[in-house]
Image (cartoon, rainbow, N blue to C red; front, side, top):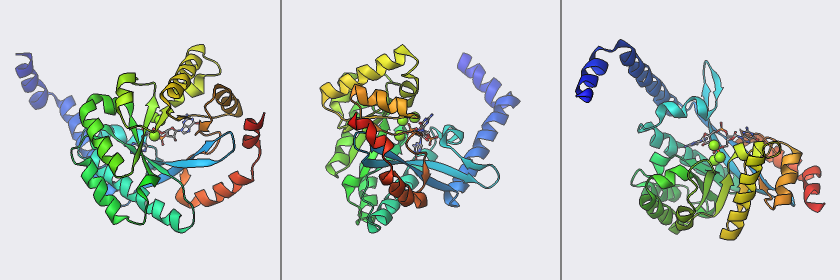
Length: 289
Ligand code: C2E
Ligand code: MG
Ligand code: MG
Ligand code: MG
């Protein structure tokens, strides 16, 4: 009865909700046009090993170069496409763009893995593995092992069977997975064990807080311990300062990504950053002490 009343009241007669739906619809149409009109781009953030300064990879992060509003971070537009087919459309664009960039870097002699974030609905869209295999065939100069997919813990847990099957299919194509934002979902160890995951990324919120907040520190320590027991490499996100890096080193988590190392940057800036980074010695020194 409530449902019936709800239908009558809200969908037909509630002007506020009607307006909200209309706005959402307009936003999606605008985003769809942006996708088709080349207003999206990828920025890349380096990931390093702080024991020796080695750059171990880069993460592709989508941006919207909005003609009026400037460069928009994903937090400004991902929520409005969530649950719509645009999520998969964006995901395919991102994969294609990242593979094209990988090919370009390979030609320039920059041989780094590129991490791509995959949304839950895209991963579980049914033919993810087949479509990815098609994309790899189109970018056949790119070694599949150079592409790494970051999935949220929650995505995998949503339908563990389907996630496992899709991930294993991708693995058979030579593609590795990372679990992103680890610690923010349910962190089911049983599930983690079932999934073909080669890297765990501990969420930036715990890393950012680990120097002041004993709870955050306890979480970081537990995840470091767990990752070691599972024999999985661990990468810390949100490394903003030298102190963070030192604390992580001391705990035995040498893989790091964060503003303290480099902010996400356009692909064109990466070669110069790599050169400057290699010339630096301060981060390298952390591992020697
Ligand atoms: P994420 O995958 O966990 O990416 C890390 C986010 O933290 C990025 O935000 C990055 O710019 C930011 N970050 C890096 N270092 C630091 C630091 O030291 N401190 C702080 N406070 N933040 C740092 P961004 O680019 O705004 O992306 C936010 C989220 O949007 C990503 O979180 C990811 O979940 C999603 N996202 C980004 N690009 C894509 C994409 O191409 N596809 C999908 N499906 N999701 C994406
Ligand atoms: Mg990520
Ligand atoms: Mg993350
Ligand atoms: Mg995140």
